[in-house]
Amino acid sequence: MITPPDRTPLPREFFDRPVLEVAPDLLGRILVRTTPEGPIALRLTEVEAYDGAADPGSHAYRGRTARNGVMFGPPGHVYVYFTYGMWFCMNLVCGPEGRASAVLLRAGEVIEGAELARKRRLSARNDKELAKGPARLATALGVDRALDGTDACAAGETPLRILTGTATDSDQVSNGPRTGVGGDGAVHPWRFWVTNDPTVSPYRAHAPRRRRS
DNA sequence: CAGTCGATTCACT
DNA sequence: GTGAATCGACTGA
Image (cartoon, rainbow, N blue to C red; front, top):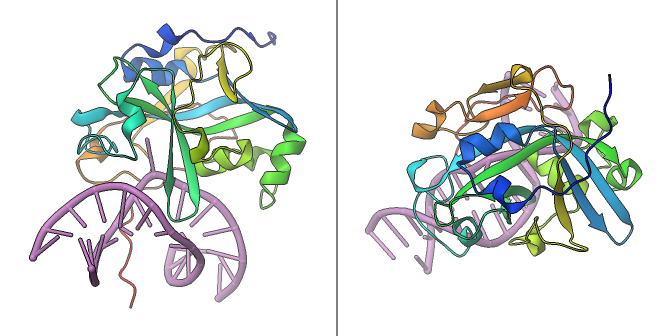
C-alpha cells in the first residue's frame, strides 16, 4: 500500500549523527526547493557519504578552504560546489560540527513541480532523467552557489528544506563504491541507492582526463 | 603564477 | 563508447 508522504521537516538532530548513518537514512526523504515560480519537490533515491578529513575522496580531506568552509560548520546546512566549469552539486552537512562530513545528493524522483523542473532540464528525455545525477538534480532544482550555506532545517519560508517523507527500509537499500571517486577514496562503499529505482544514475568508475594539446 | 584536473553531462560515432 | 565543454580551486615551484 502507498502511504502519503510525511511533510514534517527533519529536525537538525537528524543530521547531527555520523554521516554513514545519515546517508542511507536520507533515501525516501523529500527535498523541497521553493522558487518564485513555485515549489519543486523530489524523493531522494541516491546519495553518497563523504567523511571529512579522514576521507581521501572528500573535498575536506586537505583541510578547510574558502570553497568547502560550510562543511566545517553545523549540520543541516547545504554545501554547494561548482565543478567542470559548468555544474553545481549539493550536499547536506552532517555532524558533529567540525568533522566536515556531508552527503552528496545524487538523484531523486520529482514528485512535485515537474513542469518547473522540465524548463530547467531541457535535455532530459523523460521525467526520470530530471534529477538522475548530482548536477542534474541541482539544475532541476535551480540550486547554485548562492545557496551555499543555506540552513535546510530553518523554520519558515526557506529556499530549501528536507521533509520526513517515508524512510526506505534497509532491505531496499543497496550500496557500493562512490561514482567518479578515484585513489584511496575508491575503496569505501559509501554510495547508497534505492534498489532498482529507475531514477538512480549509472555507476561510473573514476576516469582520469587525458591531456589536451 | 602557470599547470592540472575535477564528487559531470551531453552530443556524436 | 569517446571526446569536448568550460572555469575556478588547488598545487607546487
